[in-house]
Image 1: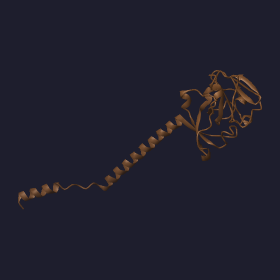
Image 2 (image 1 turned 90 degrees about the horizontal axis):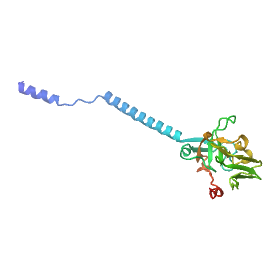
Image 3 (image 1 turned 60 degrees about the vertical axis):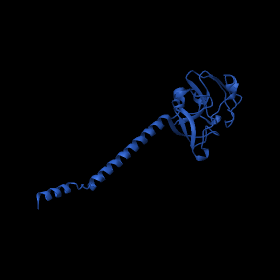
Image 4 (image 1 turned 90 degrees about the vertical axis):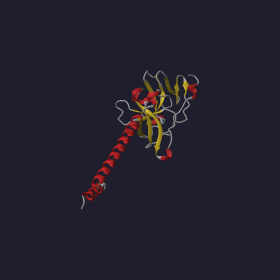
Length: 207
């Protein structure tokens, strides 16, 4: 065989590509899948932490908010709402109970703001001398009370006035006990939607 023929043969052999190893291809695929999975889990964790920071999920326990809310309902509360502005009268809020009242969060309605004069008499609630129209309560309160809400505190009541552990029983609520404003009921589905907050037009006209 001539030298010229041998050189051509060697040159042609060097042009033949090597086949990729099946084991290397499999390893690359597994690494890619693991990377995608870790990225997805990390993103889900970040979203979960953000949602938990801005909102919370709470359950109604008992009948203290009847007929507005019912035992066993699940609510979403916005924590960020009160970072932007303070609670308002008529808001339904989630709160940490005062000392000695347990550890399970309460759900009540804000009635009195800091500086408000609150009086309960003749089956009605009066704020700054004005009787509130309260179509949401289960019945008129059967007790009497008179106070001025201290700075930084709130006066909260359950809508089931005569069957509620609230400010008429344990006093004014420090503002830092309020966790957030309820914004949505997601279970049971028959109660799906925003909770019944209330605006008192009789107080808006004098402010």
